Image 1 (cartoon, rainbow, N blue to C red):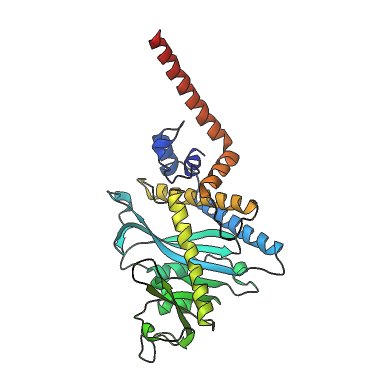
Image 2 (image 1 turned 180 degrees about the vertical axis):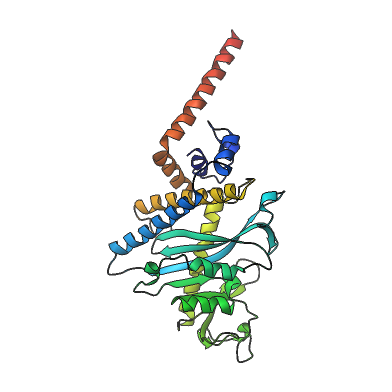
Length: 342
């Protein structure tokens, strides 16, 4: 509970030395050595996520939102020596650290982190292969909805093996694609001039609908391509392709608010527990947000306020003990100060 209190500070600085009435050594023992079941916690989080989706379906029997599965790779950059994590620490796209392939479920307003896999470097399963492994953890009850679930991924997962694996599970796919990818007719993707054109990428037997969007983040606009097995208009496919960016918002929140990448543990068990508890903090705040009145369109949740609200309602005794210790320290300081003046 003390460590969860640190995570729910909402500042992203869940450092053991910032704890109040527990020492950093005690928190380290809790993460690295204490005999509690990490797998049981992961199962509990998944079961709660499944129950939340099913409850949402039950509340909307006529207009059930589509289940969307988002996969992406995120890098937790680290410096220094992590001897116990040697086979986890690699450099990917210029970032050195641990790299996670994450599966994230979206259904209506629900945003639920589901599972992750660790990329272990060259010569091991690729990010796309790990993503297919993550898909096997999704219960069949969720994948057999009336509206076909849709998977979103970026260009790092565009391999033919991955696309065929997704389609074989009966899912629709909307995926980013490199501009240099070749098509069966000899053209590259960048040479397609009509948004919504149906093309056949090399290595795939399935025809794919192709579109693109323009990003204006830098001085020069950047063209990003997206393709799908669905026969959609070019403009609509481009709009649907943007939904993948919701997982980027999740990464930004869980890193910036709930300290996902601030781990400094000396064991794999400690790191896994850190990640699971960070996910728990995010999930508690998200469920708190769903319980609040609906926000006006175009406004975003204040994760700092949500974390504070959950902190005060979920673990109030921790906050109370911390404040009592601070008051005792303040009284002791004032007592010494008065004695010096006299």
